Length: 345
Image (cartoon, rainbow, N blue to C red):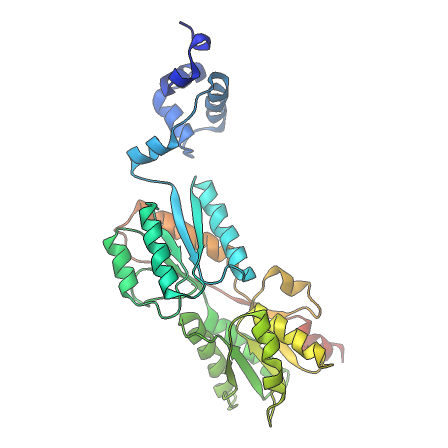
């Protein structure tokens, strides 16, 4: 019986290999998306698959390899544009390696985080990228270790000396942006921070206070607020109604800065002219809003790529020494801090 006469349900990998003129092992590598096979050979194998109507049983292949080619991605606020950009970076890197991610939004809830991690285990994911909820105990890392589930912490470090971590240099970034405002002549500068304490907030606060103390300026204006646009809008009155109000604000992230700029404009004040506003992250909107936002670029896509890369390495080498990757930040001076007005004089 010829291949053409065979029922497609009986077509097997050996048939595909013979049709393509390659070994069964090579055909298997192609279907498992291995980068070790030449493009011309891959093309012949895929043409054979199409011609014969072969259906590759990826589930069985993953079972043999004890891999599901899936990972869990847990973020604290999926509505934040930063996490959108980071997720794109994670997805792009995983896609090249033949992996897919299950995205979960913890909403800053320890209960939801615990539930999602258990669900990821039930789904037998090969590892997780975790932006931990504030207050996450070290025992979570130990639990993941007991489950033999590789984990890369990102943005927020549960432990400074335990496990893999990928983040940005928030302390240096906040120090740079605060110095920028001081050089422009501001002496009363507010830090509008997160309402939850975690490593990312601690590092931001350390950078801000370091710059202020170096210039013998008071760092008493640290206001707690959720890291959202609405919170930035709502806190505007609190800032301006103080007895000795600030003339500039360093915001926890770009979302807070966008909200603050709207709040100022509603009061007839122009950000960058009447009050300096800066953010952190450099999400796409920062460069095109009006006025354009001075911010600290934290490269969320690159951060997502780096976190996914490290997780893939850890999956391949689960017993390797823990790694910590800190990406450099960069100050981007735009209109909202008033630099363009000073330069025009």
